[in-house]
Image (cartoon, rainbow, N blue to C red; front, side, top):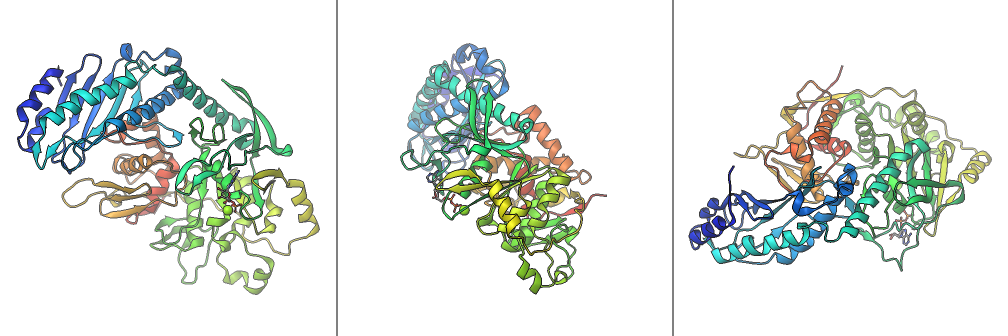
Length: 573
Ligand code: ADP
Ligand code: MG
């Protein structure tokens, strides 16, 4: 495609002033702004429709990013995250009402508390920066407002872009700090396995959040800063800031115990979120968790497609086959069992469980209940009887918040006690108590049987809606309209941005028919897709290359697929 002079854009806009909105189609194309190129990739059909998609490309000689920011890749990724944040601020300041509908609205993805790869701002190895954003082309009713369009496209937008990207080193110290923090955080995470840890929380961390709907930290004046307890204190080495002291959560089975409201769930949530690197000031900087740790919770009402839950549940009242368990309406316990089987299916190495969001009968069955209800009448083998097998036979660790069920002391390797928001190592105390008060409960369940793999039918992953071949509409940060069906993802508590939900929905469409070919197992197909994304970047999932996708894990992708109510699978082998 040829690049035209910037003035051509000005004269085209002048020529279509006052005409019908369709005339805007003429502005599509590429324009030379001297220090950068502006691509108008898609022009909206009317002022109320999805806004037009724009892309600005700034070459290395303009951005002037130093080589020690461009390499290694984690620094470059963090630098892109940083510039995205700055650009979001600038773009917001030029976005205004310039007519009907979305006229004048300028938007770029808004990053949250985590440093993520996003398609809104990308930097290549040479230092070229590509920013993708949207703009509502101005109109009064359906008439083109030429002057407003020119102000926006030739004045405000290039000014905002330049103020951040030409050069991109205007705030070099802050940019460098952001990149080095991400590098340190990623290095600490990479080092966990070698130290036999599944998570690390640095001393001084601020774990509580402002509210249930606000992921920013609680104000320092109200928060109790984290301290590492003696028995669990470790010192890790970060490449840039050197030694970091904190609490190491070892492999195996770890309980988080303590009184109500003493910070147990908050600690678990910090561990859940440690799969991502956090921005400076978040409070959870350098709190890291192994990448394949997966939060497991009950979610009654969800759909389940032929999942092997037979290690946890057999002999349901109506004789349902629990090695191929399907339902449109799972119970608390069956949904939790399915969540574990699905997580293991795609390689989870650590399960994170909170009693607050668990089905009690899935977690424990005490001695008295065992005595009253015969084993033959109870389909559930509770998690307490599988936790050690999962670790010893499959190498899968568990961190569980338990306030009530002391029977768990018997299966724990580590017990962290939370008291007034501070952790204590209660492992030996709990072991002594377990010796002194012998539990009367009998172990349930036989040997662990390997899970059956599933082969999804790609025809059942259908995002068609009416005449549209693919229709994906993100309705809230956890719900997407996938073709004709609503896909509810609020149970995937490790999703941190709406852009991940959008990307996951698109990735399912991309995978269906390519990786999900009716022969590959779900695991093989999704691993193939994730490898494609690693090699070619997130853009690979959508040929239209929109700027509103963020990176995601195989775990959330698989979990989303598993919640599609139309999904059909057959067992592998
Ligand atoms: P639990 O799971 O033990 O019942 P939570 O983790 O839900 O407790 O915490 C209870 C409340 O205390 C929440 O409102 C939480 O935000 C707050 N909180 C948790 N940790 C801290 C802390 N370190 N400093 C201040 N407030 C905290
Ligand atoms: Mg709690």
